[in-house]
Length: 415
Image (cartoon, rainbow, N blue to C red):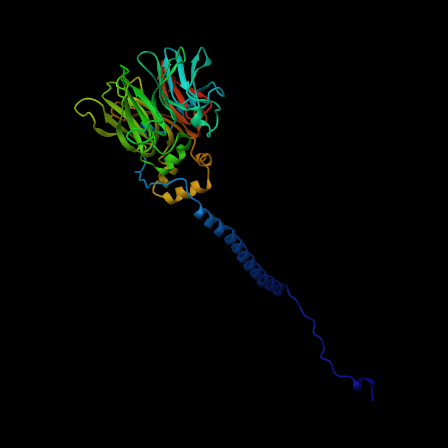
């Protein structure tokens, strides 16, 4: 027998040939599978993180109960409202020395204002002097504002004293020479059963008999003004204080963020800014229409703050924020979406929310009947920021601010 006869025949082994195409096909199959696995895993992980987070957010209690609002389309920024850079011609004054000079008045060439740290100061010969404090230190933070005090609206009375609205404490009369302070109306005294939580601006008749002032809300304090705006609370009021009888009465209620106040030159009506609604209302204080209310300016291109007289017989209105058209307004977008507002304040602080407000500065001059005469702009707020008031004096427009560490001065001859 041959040696090979006893061996079992074996099938020859064929070598496996791997071509480029087969490699690619296999890689594609493998890659497709891996990609599907990766996407599925990523989706699972994302949902595992997002769903509990959303559930947690839903369980959080919102600090606000937003009302559903409605705005018409803002007016086109054309004609007197056409965008420009005129506010950039203003000059910053006392930068870093004044924080939040909300309202400005003058006695002669001496300027007076209130600051975020509770002081009433005068600016004379380019120097700043403290003349009074309405609250008690410590000051400088949002938390201690109620005790420190926050001077807002300011006016000069017929006898040369200052009338000041403090957001937390009420209405004061301040002697600019001696610094003596007298409280006229205390915020701790309810008016018609409602607390005054946010005293804002005031106007005084030429004889000093009547003081018209606003209380922005009976619920929210000044330190929570972003809550007030986003909630759309309609508990703001226009009030009247009689300096002889010492009586306070409510002239208007149901205002959404009652803000700036201004008497007409003839003192027959009072204008009041309704900030949240981007409009100015008018209340008649004398004549045949006494006690009547109508709309002075509706659907403004921004949210009005203080109102002051202009030398042309009209009114300067400072806009705390704008509604650009063309452009985007966050407040308009959110107006009829209270559920989004709730979520925003569940997860973000007021300070964070304020960072989303465009730094677009705008001052408007209205005619005596409420028409737009001209406007001054500073897109992006490069020079003038967070304007609260435009006070005209001796050919200049002094621009107050509710948070900037300076005031601005604009030469009206330059614009």
